Image 1 (spheres, rainbow, N blue to C red):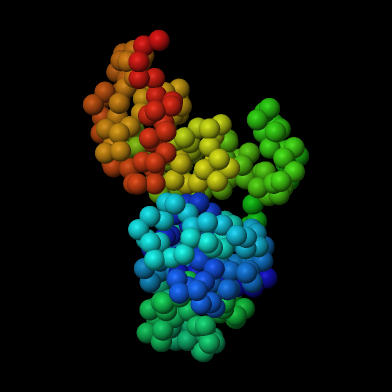
Image 2 (cartoon, one colour):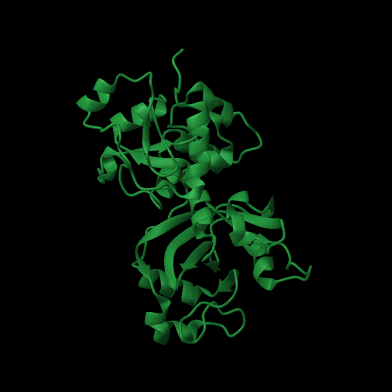
Length: 308
């Protein structure tokens, strides 16, 4: 097992929400970059520390070797200067309860940094790089400073899950690794990696304000059945909803505008909203651009907008 350090300032929402790291293969002028080349050196089981705005916000477990992948479309303007052809590595990121600020611990960190490819400047600010290697001594120290977070590989044993017909199709797909199959099946059930990724962006039910996790459902915005495998496990394609709100949303009896306005279906008896204490003019916080992409599908393909 090796330790790595990734700077994700501009694309952390996309990468951590989608469960991956992505870099171009070369610089825009065609020359090689050691911080992109490092992508081809990582292996499943390696540990990655993610720095965002001077804080280590999460620790990830590498799930795959690097493979060729076009630049994610949801990078938008953040990746405008990067070439389209790149490396992708699947990573399961686990958010730290308390972000770690390296600059507060430089007396301990500085002696353990190798001079070549070091992730931090001497004052604790991040270097201008993407992915770099760190030694075992520094990796061990960072885990200790982060409170020894519990890090585990995702579930790979499918034998105890019990399968629907859709899930059985996944199991028979020879192109998928066992880890991916388990992740996709748990995502269909609103559990596992999908639920954890949703929690990066959603802390409570949008409508009721309930924040106790055990009472909330991790609901797909674009239904699991209509999504690609990448969309099925993306945290941007999910909301935490109270069970009764999830039922309305899942059946297309309510949807949301990008600005957060709740829209009831004309097929819904509005007395239901009254009995469940949901105002028909409810407006929740605005959805970010990544969630808005999936909401567009929900409004056009799931929401019951007309009488039939």
